[in-house]
Image 1 (spheres, one colour):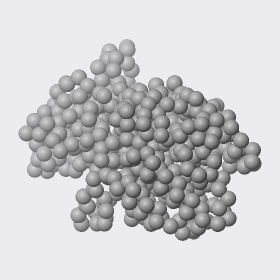
Image 2 (cartoon, helix red, strand yellow):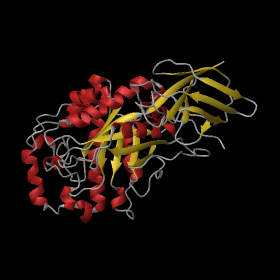
Image 3 (cartoon, one colour):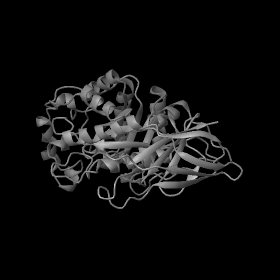
Length: 413
């Protein structure tokens, strides 16, 4: 069975490759994660007072877009409204539980969109479907859904072209009719080129759901390869993940992923053609923490070394064992090689392993050369196009270097 051709917006989304997720709201002032209202059993009447101290004085869409750009990220998905029900945008009379009616006194989504466009970053909007503030969520669900659609319509009509709408919360009422067709049709009418994504959560990673959906989600878990044969529509994939253990800022959360882990996660996503949406939790005032900023910059340095294959190349027919994989950009093949050793004298680096020949199968293209992209060193290889076997002698890192995942580019004859 044939694989459908991706629609233009989906093809564009796949080439973005790497994006920033931002969870930011009233909860950020408490520094205990985005679920603290529910987990901490904070009374609603007490919690909503947080809007009176939500100054957002350090929030700059332009600065955040610059940080994302430095990291090699092509898009940002920001929580316009999280489960707490507070909106970072002007709800234009739906209620006064929004940023313009808070101590911030301004439309923060307008600032965000303007900053993204100035830096060439595609803005995307997260919007909760679960709502702890609106009493209709549990009292009059059909009325709540009308409120939700009116909220989304504001986002789709007041901020120019956006990259997509990213929903989260349907899993909270699995037996309810969420009237998804009406919601998604509204988006498609007003934002025909916007991605429609609805997070299926930790227990249903990779599930497609409604036909309007443009990408499946893999929350906090590396994506699996998608079999698109026979699908009525080509659907993309995206892994969303926290940089530490919370989506919203955790002031005492020091369990950060390391830079090598982040690089390997990005590569694991691109191995199967999925995007990597990496989350940061800004401070109460809206500033990205220096540690998070520097980790992202480190990933950006790696992307500069690896080249445009991170964005433009896709999985191909060549197979390997273990974590190694090969991508194809339409002209050249890119070999992503893991767990190489540093070459040095024995008294400097102990246990030199992980270098030498590695095998690949289903290689139908005859190559003229294979070179490391970081130092242009040519690699020895042998291949047999009759049986599709290939062996490449991958050399180790020169002393003083280690890119975690090393990339080689191969040119065809």
